[in-house]
Image 1: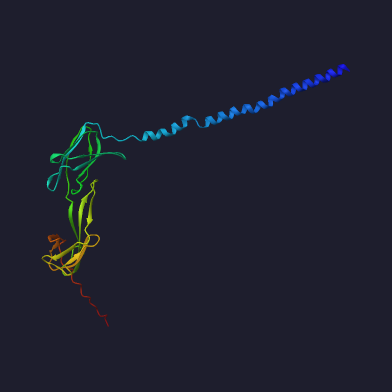
Image 2: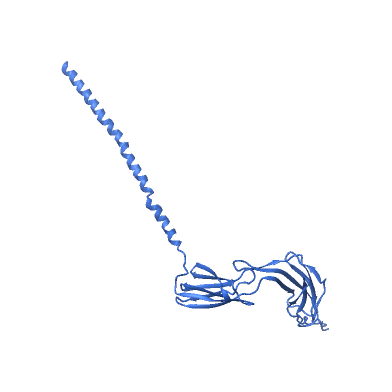
Length: 275
């Protein structure tokens, strides 16, 4: 009886020991999977990925330079009255689709000079706001050590501007025509662009010159576009001038010369059919 009790006790003890050993092993399995999951997350978004993506953007932002170099561009700016002081000279260096630009102001005698330039393709223009328009644009290739001289000429566009349009153009002798006069104030902006500001409501008069007759009322007020129109008729071939009165000031306006009228229309003839 005693021996049997000891055997049952030993079996129970062994069973408890086995349960104690097997229990921790089943709980350890999830613990080993957690570190594996965390390491996977950290490797999917590495720090180097962001810097590699931004690298091409920083390399494209390099600015085009105009110098320093061994070439130079200089010259003078002149207008209708001679050399122009205080004019703006706009210089651009072109490489592919990139452009580098700078501006300078003419000094005494309309002179200007831009030293220490790199060679390459250049574009140069000049203007003076608000009354002198843009010069023709000069485009050229500048050698690495070239000293180039440019003389830039500015047209007068400021002040009162008068433009005349004739329909038909040219007018014909003995045939009706119309002439439209537009009056405005010319200006040049800070970028060298020219524009005309219309003068509406201005009462002006048109009188015919030699060989041109004004057939409508001579005195007309300009519309919102600063324009007024008259009916005219040429009476002599080659006639080309009319007289415009604006604010008691008289101006001669040049029109396209009148030409001979249309040739006579041929008389239609009919031929009787043979009998």
